[in-house]
Structure formats: C-alpha cells, structure tokens
Image 1 (cartoon, helix red, strand yellow):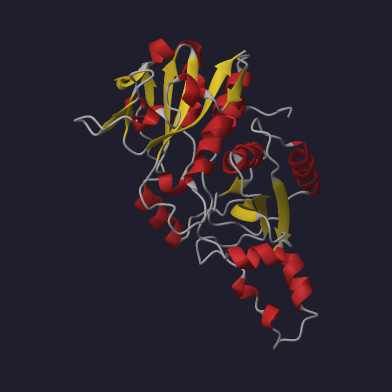
Image 2 (cartoon, rainbow, N blue to C red):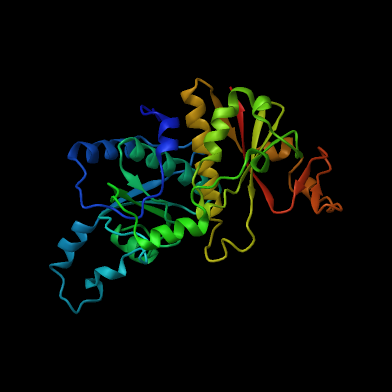
Amino acid sequence: MIIEFPIEDSVRKRSSVRNFSDRQIEPEKVEAIGRFVKALDNPFGKEVRFHFFAADDLAAQLSSVPHDAPSANPQRIGTYGVIKGASHFIGASIKKEPMALEALGYEMEALILYLASLELGSCWLGGTFDRKGFVEAMEIDEERLLPAITPYGYAAQRKHFKESMMRRLVGAEKRKPWQQLFFHNDFDTALTEQSAGELTLPLEMVRLGPSASNKQPWRVLLKDEELHFFEDKSPGYSAAFSYDIQRIDLGIAAAHLELSARERGITGRFETDGDVELGLDEEAAKGAADEAGSKLTEKSNLRLPDHYEYVFSWRRK
C-alpha cells in the first residue's frame, strides 16, 4: 500500500464528524476514494472488504417498492440519531478469524486518514448503527461480519446537540498521558520520550488515535528494541458483540504507528509471536497473581497487569 498524503498532518486534523452538510463530494474525490480503497492492504494478511452505500441509491430503490412492503421504510437503516445529514457511508466486513478485527481497524483507519486529507469528515461507528439494515443494504454475505461503518462527507458548520453531548460524555478531545500508555522493559516503568528516541513521533500518533468510547485500550511495551502491543480489556465492554470490538482499536493503533514511522523513513514489520518471546504463552501465563493483582510470567519475570492481553509486536527491519 503506497501512501501519498501526509500522515502526521492527517492524524492531527482528523476528528469525528456527526453532522454533515448537503455539499456534494466532487466526482474526482469520489473516484480517488474508490482507487484508494482498492489499493488498501494490512500487515496481518487478512481480507477486509469495503462496501459503499449512498442514501440517494436507497431512495431510488424505494421509489419502485410498494409503500406497504416491509423493505420500504428507509428509517430502518440508520444510526439512531447519532449521525445527521450524511448521505454516504462505507462499511468494512471480515470473516470471523484471528487478527481480522485488527486488520479491519488498520485498513479502515488508513481510509479515514485519507478522507481527512481530502478535507472530508468521517466517524467510526461500531455500535450505534442499524447493523442488520446496513448488512442488507450493502448486500454483505451472511458468513461475514460488519463490525464498523463510517459516514463521510463535508462537515456542517455546527455540531448538532446530540453530537456535542456525546463528545462531552466521552471526553472526545482528551487523551491519556504517555505514562499510562507506554512502558519500558516492564509495566512498572513508564517510557519517556527521550528513551523512545526516533519512535517518539510514531508513538505520539498512536496516543492521538480514535477508539471506541475513547477508552484508548492500547498499551505498548518497548523491550529489546521491539514494541509489544497489549489490549487493556474493559470488562464487559464487548458483551453485546460476538467479538472483542476493542481489537479494532488495536488495529487503528497499528496503522498510526506504521504509517507515521514509514513517513519518517523508519521501517518495521508486525509479528504475532511476541507473547512467546516475552514468556506470555499460554503455559507461562498461568503464574499466580501477586499481591499487586498482576500475573507474573514464569519465563521472563514480566508482571502483566490484570485485564492486559497480548495482541502483536512491531520489530524494526
């Protein structure tokens, strides 16, 4: 995947848009978005399919459907009032398999950053949309999951009331400080920007990333010149889904790290075997909890805080 737009600028520019204007997207931008989607890939080797949906297309379809038909109600396809004025949506579907959610997060966030570079607004939606309605409208195969969609278009000049309320509720502009997210050698030692060296900017891009309910579940451990990513699992948060929705957030973090590192000439690769290297394989992770409520792995003496789960590692080439 070749990136030809500024990553750092797009990360800092991007913000969730929930109120859209009726300004039409220029045809050349529509075509550019289509080309970008076709070129998307991810470092986890999983297939992510993108599906486009336009409200105008639905209206045209419904005009030929009898009014008393079950499918003739456009209100059944919606976002529960969270999104206003949007006429274009993109959905991403996957098969339910390991690392697929992370792959979806990676590719869809790359797309959202590209939309930001085109001055188009977007908003990650993972729970506040009519999933069944969009699955039908986007004609997604039954064996595939539709974990997330995004509206896209030009932002309205003002935010609507529900949007302002939601942003205040989740603290949309707030991000956790470095010492809560990034660690050095163990989880008792915070990683400083000085110790991070040239990885400081890519990690800052991770810190600024969007996440479901702004929970920012990524935790990154720098050890032996490798970055190991963990999920700080929020108990019960994914109970309404058949999958761990926070794994999408880890894919977003992966995109921000790799794309911003690449922009600075730093190359690396993602691997999923860091748990063995760290002594976090299934057998080692059975160590008894210590007094601090952490798991002490037998192989590396690494204390793993409760609710932390290893996801993947990034190694420099």
